[in-house]
Image 1 (cartoon, helix red, strand yellow):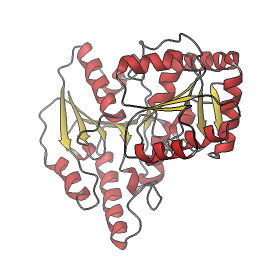
Image 2 (cartoon, one colour):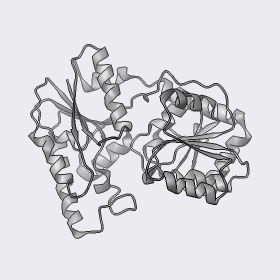
Image 3 (cartoon, helix red, strand yellow):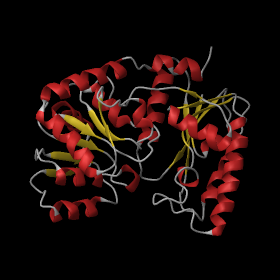
Amino acid sequence: MAICTAQTMFVRGGAELLVAGLERELRARGHRVEVVRIPFSWSPSSVLQNALLWRLVKIEADQVIATNFPSYFVKHPNKVVWLTHQHRKLYELYGTEFSEFGSDAADDETRNIIRAADTRFLSEARRVFTISRNVADRLARFNGVSAETLYHPPPLHGALACREYGGFILMPTRLEPHKRPALLVEALRRSRSEVPAVIAGRGPLADELRGRIEQYRLGSRVTLAGWVDESALLDLYARCSAVFYAPFDEDYGYVPLEAFGARKPVVTTADAGGVLEFVTDGETGFVAGNDPADLAERIDRLADSPALCRRLGEAGHEIVRRMSWDDVIPALVPQ
């Protein structure tokens, strides 16, 4: 078995965690596995060249499982795709504040080339799966390719626990524009409960967030914890009252599932994409508009009631408790 993945240098995010989990689970079931990684640059000037490298790679294996753009360009007679995402900045993010593409006439040509290549090379696969309905919907909308969704457990599945509803909000995320960490800071500025928060993660928005926190005099309430190791993250999940996670049009999102593993509710937004496949307003958390005042009202409701946090968190736990790799591997590698 060869797992194919494009590697963004010095980044370890959801795609890398998925590949690590898939490799582990395949090995546990007796398969010989190699992970094939090719470094990828997301700069507009090199995207086409980087993508086409995969077409030149010859992989000698019984089966390949391609995961992300552009690893599914690989040519193999027994190719299965389990898609995490395409090049989002050339698809649904094109022309938005979250993409550097869309302001130049040449961008349209690049987009058309990638779209045509995606459609062709994905259609070569024996089967196409996605990690969420949101990713499957994009694939059908932009490329006319049908896919089945395979949900998988989050990386910390089995290690998460709830010790208390300790009166603070947790936001574990990369500090990048489409993850929108500033929404939490803006919401806390408007909250009446003065509930504290911990933002765990690092990224290019760290200095901007620090400036907002100082400007709004929230230094005593908002902790920028930076990168935390697994044991520290498990401790934060175990002690927080609720988890805030409001990215824009997320592919899947491990954070809500990890929150549910710790029996904690999730506050998110109506445009959070794949997150909404698990977070249901009033059942497993709260879904609000991306207006900070609306988010502040939901946060205050949870801050006022540990019993409400417990009820919503327990409902979320029932969702993640049923997730298993035993449902994923037989679909990807049929006997």
